[in-house]
Length: 113
Image 1: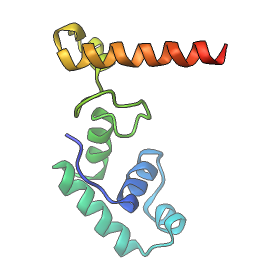
Image 2 (image 1 turned 60 degrees about the vertical axis):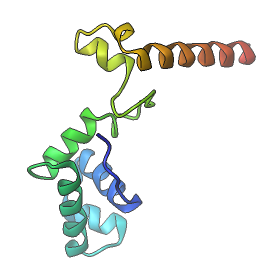
Image 3 (image 1 turned 90 degrees about the horizontal axis):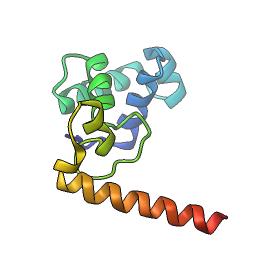
């Protein structure tokens, strides 16, 4: 599940994931601590998390913070199935999306050469 977050809320989430403290985040984003607290409350609520740390964990699990491209749907795709010990070929979306991804990657490498 990928909850809808504003740009500011995504920045707060990414900075928390990088280990910045509340005052550091507030200073970096030029917002008040109370505003930061509000954004974190919204983030926690949208992820149905217990606290902001749990929200960061859930965002990482959902593939929002890891920087890898989302190949389809609301989960991290082909590689996530492999990490869980599942066969990604059993997921039709993953199989099709992975094939398209690899073909596009191959085509871009051939153009670069």
